[in-house]
Length: 177
Image (cartoon, rainbow, N blue to C red; front, side, top):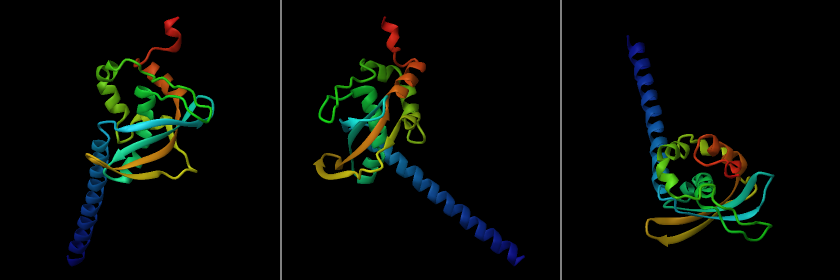
């Protein structure tokens, strides 16, 4: 009888520990989501990638440097969809936002909430970190933010555009002709 009680106690402790770890991870993701809800970032071209991709540096802001770094992929895709960037060095040319009408974000709010969801949103299919560049971390004194973190990211803009076209969010390039 004592062995059964001991085993039950051990199993209960294990389940509680797993629950606490899972809860902590969910809490971190929610904080990361909240930190970037306002889409506070800057995006700039840093070079030319493979055909159909853009290599950008995303400067994300957050109270914690690691949160800003983790959100850089999401901010890069958001920047390509809604913001674009101006040209610069390294052979970069101007990149218009894939969506030029700002009201589309509100009209398709449910789509974009799911698309940019912190728990495996579809945006992750179109982006990757540069493996050879370490993030730049700058301490800032802005209301609500402590860090500005620059991360180099590659965005597959061709696949992103095709996906948004298939979802009916943007018109196809050939639809205007």
